[in-house]
Image 1 (cartoon, helix red, strand yellow):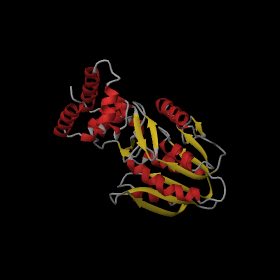
Image 2: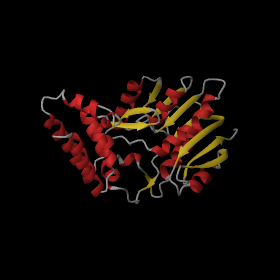
Image 3: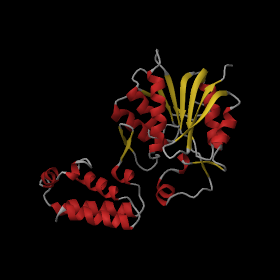
Image 4: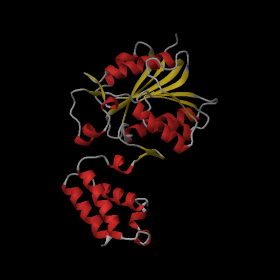
Length: 284
């Protein structure tokens, strides 16, 4: 059985079903234990296939994974891997899959952290898989990073990713409203659940990803308000708060921030949509 024809067959089926063709490449590469780029090198693929007693086993495994994907399961959950910034993160049921939009937030934070003349203390509220906390700890080794997360399932993945990426990130397993009483940080980052409870979502998101990490209340702002209150408590005077939010929530976020924060700025994503807001903690 020729791997090229099998891959093309799967791509065609994915395309006709409304799924990205690249998912087929990711799944076959996963079965073979190689990267997606290596999949395009016939010499490498043929060499890997020789390591299997029966090449048909490879295609049976590939077909089984394709069925799962065509059933709506996210490819990241099937492979157990999500890519974020320069990181390879372990993910699965119970933890939110990191989004590209959040990478842009990180790209804007890093210059601020790297330019600091002293070690910076950072708190990542609702850390989930640890994408934000680990990205900061990896690229700014002098930063003191704390990841706050209280969901038991998400904590499993957070601990795995911190260990796998060998970074010094402290975990606080507690609700953001009560975590770190008495602690003050230079920077607080948050990507809270902000989707309105009644908003319809794509099948694979609604049926596979944890609702506790998606929905933020009736208007989507209940949990962001709690995260803003926590950030206000945790930040040093003139400390910086950065929070991701929905594209329709910029004004609502600014209104809540206005009580304790100044220099409030809404930032847009690559599609020119309001996606996250930064602000400076007002002097007490």
